[in-house]
Every structure is written in structure tokens, then in C-alpha cells.
Length: 186
Image 1: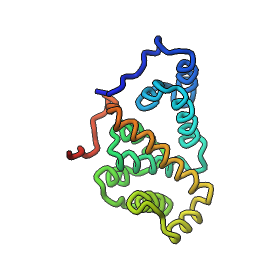
Image 2: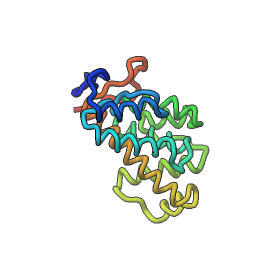
Image 3: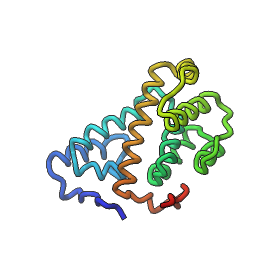
Image 4: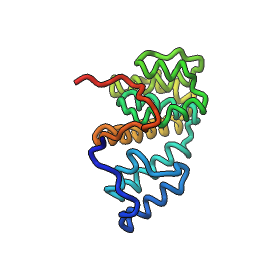
């Protein structure tokens, strides 16, 4: 059960309605999960959804690599909602079942594509060491460009915000999908 239930669309004030309509009428086609939580603070919802729209739909990072990064972030945070929401997109974008399953169980995936291996290594190093060494940075720049690396950091940051929202407000995974991520230990 979520700690902060979504606001009934019939009860939205003018500011909330504008943000709700922008999200619902955009590429997401609905206001769900963490975006529904953010409606409690419409300015946060507006700015965050705009960043998310850029990261998801307009970034220079190809969809396959972007979805790989999103899967990484969902697993890192054990954000079941995010995992369930993006797994179909990752598969559709060309991330293999083997890679997704390895991420899910916390293993290094059996990559067959160098760009995926570099994105995974970059995110792993960034989260484990809170920095990225020069060699890996340069190799990733050569693979996806400087702009791609900037966008990748933006994607990781945005999906950290998404995952934190899911975790703090206990946004449940979609009811139509069985949980797949390991349970957290207390």
C-alpha cells in the first residue's frame, strides 16, 4: 500500500490539472506510479516529468542503452514498479532476456554488445565508487559521444529520483505483473 495515495483526478486543483493533462496527453499516455505521487507538489511534478520526458524520449542515448540504464537503476534501488514498467520497453528496444535476467539477480550480464557492456560498467563504477575512472570515461565517450555521457548521467539521476519516490512512498508494482526483484532484508 502506498504511503501517499494518488489524488483523484476529479479533485485536482488548476495547477495539478495542468500537469496531469500534460502527462496524460504526452507519450506516457497516463499518470501512474511516482508521477501520480508528485502531483501532490505540482511544480515538482511539472519539472520532473519534463526532465523525464527528455531522458526517456529525447535523449541522444539510443533506446536500447537508455532502457538498459533504467533496468540497472530499477535493480540498484530494488524499485519493483520501475522494473516492471520498463522491462517490456527494454526487451522491445533490444536488450536481451539474458542481460535483463543477469541484472535482475545481481550478476554481471553476458554482454554481446560493447556499448551495453560499457554503459553497465559506467553505471556500476559510478554507484560503487561514486566516480568513474578516466579510462572508462574515455571509452564510453568514444562509444556514445560526450553528449551521450551527459545524457546517460541525466538518465541515471532521473531514475534515481523515480526510484527514491517509489521506495519512500511505497508505490506498489503494477498488479498485473508478478514481482521479480530480490526482497530487501531488514
